[in-house]
Length: 271
Ligand SMILES: Nc1ncnc2c1ncn2[C@@H]1O[C@H](COP(=O)(O)OP(=O)(O)OP(=O)(O)OP(=O)(O)OC[C@H]2O[C@@H](n3cnc4c(N)ncnc43)[C@H](O)[C@@H]2O)[C@@H](O)[C@H]1O
Image (tube, rainbow, N blue to C red; front, side, top):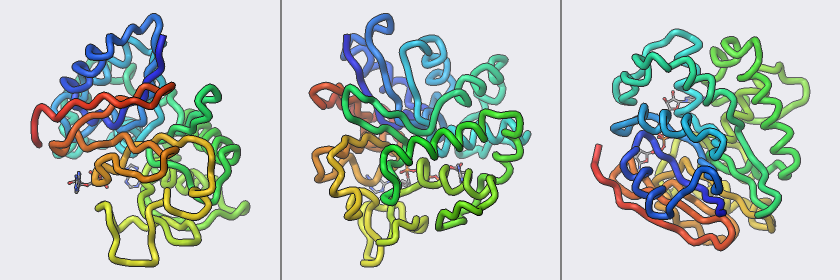
């Protein structure tokens, strides 16, 4: 019986399947945590969804920006962007079931046994773990509730940059989603910078979120994906960057949670 976490699949089914076989993953005994971005850009998003759907009792997903975008397109009747290569997901007769399955997944998970937070992009430096989980539950109620379409229609904006208790619920939702699914660089106030997707910044006023002083003091483990350009390289021993850019020709990384040992499968194809 083992627990694993895996980086962004982004439709790279072949590498995913290879890694599961390599660790002899047994859905009746083992559990797999996915840091999100199951779909988009890669060759077989539908196969990734189908596989996770069939073993849903053994998997937990913290949703990524691409997953939320797929659910939003479904709700808002918007076509997929051709570069996301999601046509077969949209055309699947089981599309509604797969979307519903994704929609039931959270934005963040706390694994008591490993003293570990998992989310797609990481932890807002201004939140404690307790506050992060409270905020995640708020946003999940928005995208899982009867007004989901309304919230998805209001999801696409970098603002607000700061939290206020008087913000309307739509703005609170956007703020929470942006931190959990789109964060990379922040300033010292912890505000998001959306302009830089590389691993280094020439602008000294912004730093990777995990180098913010509030995060450096944390003792808990944080496991995240989203930031392929990092190539998994984070100095802090308690921060685990699992998106090693499989869809960009890098590799897919699977980590066993008790020892933190990693299994790496090089990308089988370039996009
Ligand atoms: N609230 C919201 N507001 C707005 N949009 C929302 C949203 N919620 C969901 N979305 C949606 O999110 C989607 C993605 O937006 P985008 O922001 O367009 O997606 P992306 O550039 O592909 O970023 P991705 O998330 O895939 O990041 P990655 O690190 O893998 O890759 C990033 C870059 O890193 C590069 N890279 C990869 N590996 C690298 C390496 N080793 N070295 C250097 N660069 C590397 C890649 O070439 C790539 O350009 C859109 O469909 C958008 O609509």
